Every structure is written in C-alpha cells, then in structure tokens.
Amino acid sequence: MLQLPDSPPRMKTLVSVDESYNLCRHLIAKYSTTFYLSTLLLSKEKRPAIWAIYAWCRRTDELVDGPASAMTTPETLDLWEQQLEAIFAGQPKDNFDVALADTVQRFPMDIQPFRDMIAGQRMDLYRSRYETFEELYLYCYRVAGTVGLMSTAVMGLDTTRNTAPWNREQQPYVPIEEEIALGIAKQLTNILRDVGEDARRGRIYIPLEDLARFNYTEQDLFKGVIDERWRSLMRFQIERARQFYTKAERGISYLSADARWPVWAALTHYSGILSIIERNDYNAFTQRAYVPQWQKLRSLPLAWMRSQVF
Ligand SMILES: CC(C)=CCC/C(C)=C/CC/C(C)=C/CC/C(C)=C/[C@@H]1[C@@H](COP(=O)(O)OP(=O)(O)O)[C@]1(C)CC/C=C(\C)CC/C=C(\C)CCC=C(C)C
Ligand SMILES: [Mn+2]
Image (cartoon, rainbow, N blue to C red; front, top):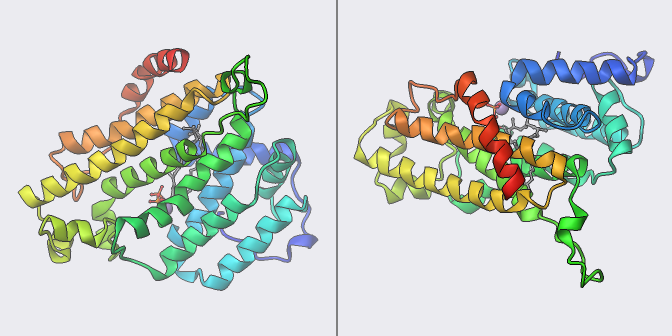
C-alpha cells in the first residue's frame, strides 16, 4: 500500500480531496497513535494538512525501511522525487498525494525540506555507520528536522507574540532552529529506543566516536552487552537528546496559539521515552521503551498548562 504506484499514474482516476485526507488519517492512526493523538488537539483546518504531511513522510520512510525496501534503489527515490515535484505542481499522481497537493496549495510551503527528507532516506541506502555526531546530525536533520519545517508551515506563527508594539519595523522571530530541534530530539530518541532492532539489521546510528569515548565496541553492541560502559554511553546520548528537547521548548511560544498544546503534547510523549529507557536500566536491546496510552493521556493537562504559560 505504501509503495510507488505500479501502473502508469496518468491513466488512473484519483480519489476526491476529502477521500484522500481520509486515507491519510487512517494511515497516521494506524502507524502512530502518538502523532495522531497530538493532531487531534489541532484546529479542524490544520489537522488534515498534518495528516497529509505525515502520510508523505511515512511513505517516504517505508521506501527504505518497510517490508518491500529490499526492492528500493536510488532510481526508486529519483522517481519518488519526481512524484514530489508533481505534487507541488498541482498534479498529484496517486490517491495519497491528492491531499498533500491540496495542503501545499492551502498552506504555501517550501519544497526543499521534502527534497531533503528524500536525501536523508537515500543515506539509509548506502550508510550503516556514522563516525561523528556532526555526520549523524545531518542524517537527523534530513529525516526528522525537516518535519518541523513542513509542519510549522501549517501550524503557523503567532505574529503578535513576535513583534513588540513599539517596534513594528522589526522582523518577527521565526523559530527555525527550534522547529528543527524537535525533529532532531525525536530522531535521537528513536535511535536510542531502536538500538537493538537496528543492530539486528547491521546498523549503528550512535556515532562511533561516542562508542570509542566510552570504550564500548561494535561487537559489544551487536552482542547487547549492558555494563557500566554502556550505561555511561547511554546517559551521554540521553543528555544530548534532552538538550534538543530543551531548545525546542523555547520555540513553542512563537507558534500560533492553537498549535502550542499539540506540540507540547507531542514533545512530552517523545521525551517520556527517554525516561522509560532509564527506567529499563538502559536495556534497549531486548526491551522496547514505550509510553503507555494512559500515561500519554494523563500528560495532556500538563501539556495544556505549559502551552498557556510558556
Ligand atoms: C517551534 C517548534 C518546536 C515547532 C514544532 C515543529 C514540529 C511540529 C516538529 C515535529 C518534529 C517531529 C515530530 C519529527 C518526526 C521525526 C521522525 C519521527 C522521523 C522519522 C524518521 C525515520 O526514523 P526511523 O526509521 O528510525 O523511525 P521508524 O521506526 O520507522 O518510525 C521518520 C520515520 C521520518 C518520517 C517522519 C514521520 C512519519 C513523522 C511525521 C510527523 C508529522 C508530520 C506530525 C508532526 C506533528 C505534530 C503535531 C508533532
Ligand atoms: Mn523507519
């Protein structure tokens, strides 16, 4: 369902815009309760647009990560990029793209973050190690930081919060770094949560320079060794991810008022995964850290309060 269309796209009759948004809603609800729950806190106008962006991002990731990913080549991604250009030109090629074509028309946005995400997925085709954090950062920006840029185009900024009444000449502050930071934080969290799963596929996202710093080897990681070296390494990684969450928090008050609660809710849920990893004594090899549904729901009032105060 998530692969490229296999029949010539122009021969197909596509679904209506409403039906397409509905497909995107089903997709997000099926793949991510956390994201879906957060979007339900958004206004009725913005919500479906985020579903459309989610669907495109998820399908892009599935090309290199999903069940049929063995068939994905650089040429597949070239075709996917052409299909993206068509969306922005108002000529969607499949039933999911119809909604995104409508979204980019209603909420004008830059195509570059979408292209960057495809570039990030390309990295997964040929890389399975990152020497330095700088290299990993580029990957995280592409596959996740870009989501912040795409989503904020829909969520909008609070222009009154942005300009002081005595200085209307001043350009409003655009929290680009903070938008990106939330994606980076979430991706770093994913990497720590999925360390065992990735190792089983021969992948290591934790920078090798960090493994070396804590005297922990690739072989240790593949064997799932949990000792003081591993715990110190994980404490270091968790602290780094938390710094990105803190940076993201500083940007939320610049978003339009109706977007702050969903973003606080999402941020609280993702960062909660780090605490679960700690509670699991850093065993990310055989225990998958997840925030239970009741805990996600319980954190909503606190997220709401934060959205009113900060
Ligand atoms: C100022 C400020 C703080 C603004 C907020 C901006 C904002 C809304 C940022 C959202 C950032 C965010 C949540 C990014 C998602 C990053 C992510 C999960 C990337 C995943 C990549 C690959 O990872 P991996 O393969 O390890 O993961 P899986 O095991 O396969 O899951 C992605 C899968 C890339 C594709 C991304 C998505 C499918 C998520 C897209 C999400 C949205 C469009 C919803 C964002 C909206 C809200 C309300 C948070
Ligand atoms: Mn994935």
